[in-house]
Image (cartoon, rainbow, N blue to C red; front, side):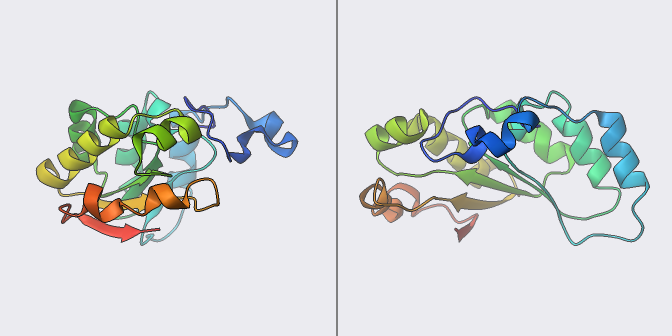
Length: 167
């Protein structure tokens, strides 16, 4: 999907080149055709792009379909719409890896840059760490607007043993 619930400071979604692709949602039928017409197996299918995958109403079904041709399925999410129930449903559907985009570990700065609540993201990350088997990655854009807010990552996420990558 190219639908998103945030308006991040540096998001390229609103670049005029992408205007025609905004607010589109791939149907389950189209995704299934793609998977069914693929030969061989993939090491990983990564669902990401210029939208928020958790806004796709059939995300669990898409993950299950993707698992037909891979053992690993990953999403990149802004993390704001995740709930404990959704995370368990995503894992049950076959999600193995999750990337959460966090561009600051300062509550005020994250709200300014992304319009997202740091405490919600930390709660979701703790749930992933403590109650799922999914591998976790944190993605951060680094710029002169946020580099200071990235410095306390160890204080915020230091105890997360499922955190495999900082990108």
